[in-house]
Image 1 (cartoon, rainbow, N blue to C red):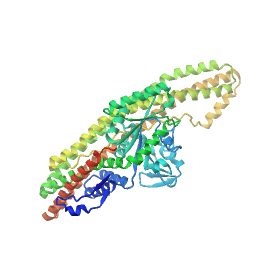
Image 2 (image 1 turned 30 degrees about the vertical axis):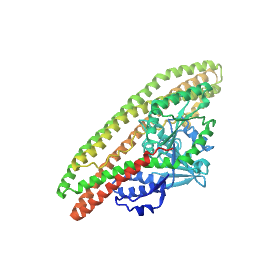
Image 3 (image 1 turned 90 degrees about the horizontal axis):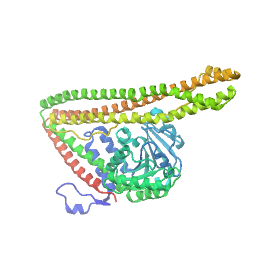
Image 4 (image 1 turned 135 degrees about the vertical axis):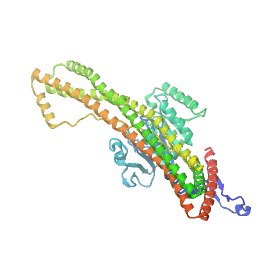
Length: 592
């Protein structure tokens, strides 16, 4: 698409306009983004201006984000590996919900790890597992922000960047803040579903939200190899009909695949190459324009707010600033009360959904396991103490593992569901507080300072890592071995007694470990979210305070200075409105 750039003034000279160079769509929108950055510098909140700068960088570098969405255990990482024809992302391990992994083209294979504190490190791509998995980087103790893998790959060279954002797989009500923060940068998405499972409520929410925000969605129905041929057809038909209803009658693009066996991958790769060659630029510009339109409108609003403040006499401006601070102080008390309610909700969650039930499980399940152990001893028949000890140790390990592997998902789901409820309540309270900040600004100064609310959501707790083997004290090992060499019936009785105690201890210990792990992760998720929303409220207030301070300084420099600043703000507001209209046209242009 070619766009002619024209002079924005109403008295455009037609001869000069005819001689203006014809710029590409990309060059045109880059120029408009550059202008919006300059106009809104100091007016938009820092986080919003950062989003604008990041959007401009994506257009300049032609970085098209193809994000893989889906719930936990849908095979997202396996799908990415299948698309690349090699194992790049770790699979079969527990991912970190707070680390984004980008995979893009590069002349050399390398891993670039960017940390939250701004540091960068380069490593071999085999080191990726050390930074993005719960096993190697528990709770992101390394402070990783983004991990970028660069490969010389045909699909990536076509202009696509694959984005694996584990947290975005829980895009329903308990999203991670990283996942939601990345959504404005999504140009197209692969939504991964499981052929063997019907659409869950969480997946319906995921797809509905993604359809409203992402220019192009491709639906991947994975794990076909787990179904018989007739069941496959029925699953694909069911999902297709459900998605048509969900998406308002639109026909979704469906790709039935088995990422594990690569069945159906070739047609998907062909579609992605066509997307890269024919749709990439239009989708990228549309995605960026959607964000820029919102920020341009907010920039115009911020300019008008500051102008309203400058028009006030200095003494009245000071009085209204004092009134604003008084009302904000009351609002901050309400924000603290909302945080307290979140803390109380988390405490209740842990008590009712984790601690109490797990303690009850250990108490209730121990007699059943002991009876199963005794039955196993009877079935094993006559064995010497050493053989019996080895067999019972293996049986206990496997039995406890099986028991907890069934138990863990149930408690994780219960915790995540309760967090979802807490998020809805707390997010609603904080959104009302953020809206009240603007209401107060409008009441006090006669204009709203902005209306763009941050993308927020509770982080789902990290998945519990099951760890069976305990490091035993050396004395315990020696004592246990000594009993296995006691001969005859006495040795067998000692072995069985030790086995029963080991079973009780392991059940107790693993219930306690699960309780501790889930409690820590739920609490950490809530604390992170609390900090995030506290920052959001502070950011909204600070941007208004900064505008009030600028207006005060302008007033103190005299009437002529204030008048020049008013003229400048009027120009900024007018031009931001014009740019918002321009970006609306870009964002409303449907991709072909």
